[in-house]
Length: 116
Length: 113
Image (cartoon, rainbow over all chains, first blue to last red; front, top):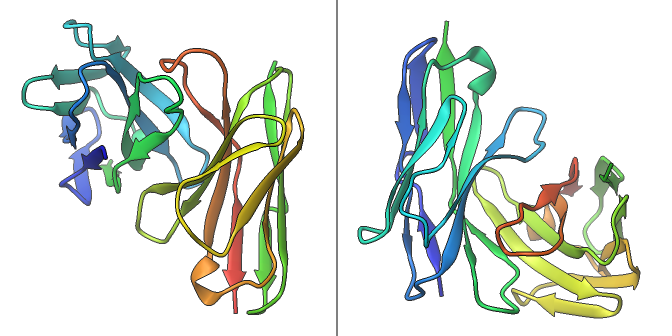
């Protein structure tokens, strides 16, 4: 079974600075998808960024980018120019590409605090 | 546009009482539907998912059950709640390919006393 590990329960960053959140996963599959979700205090889960495992190029969405290292099974999230609104729980998630495997496997999350 | 609704938003129930949480999706057809539970300080745990009406897959043995009586309706139930059922319950939907994101509802905070 696949597992997702987020080794940083909490992180903090100064406004306008850059922070990197770590995520590692364990799988025997070669094709899969990885996601970062954000959960602000409102508890609404919001997709931040996603990556297909077959793509070598790291995904980027505005101030958010990932460092995907397939061999190391690592999928870190970098937030540049941090803003107060980035404060939230961040969850890394894995989804298999195999048919019938519809579920997302989540890590336990990292709580990000942004200091003004 | 698609929207997902969950109710109630909060619920306080005594141990041993029944439970019914409802999730409905609008603006899409034949979605995959999911129930997650988020315990305090922990990540999301998938409880059930459904790829069609009447089709339910259970991920963990537990005190809960799920049903999908209509294409865009997903219900989480229990006959007798346990203290350990307390948590934040999220419903989600997706369509199409595995790359497609799951869209989450606003959640239900359940407290079992």
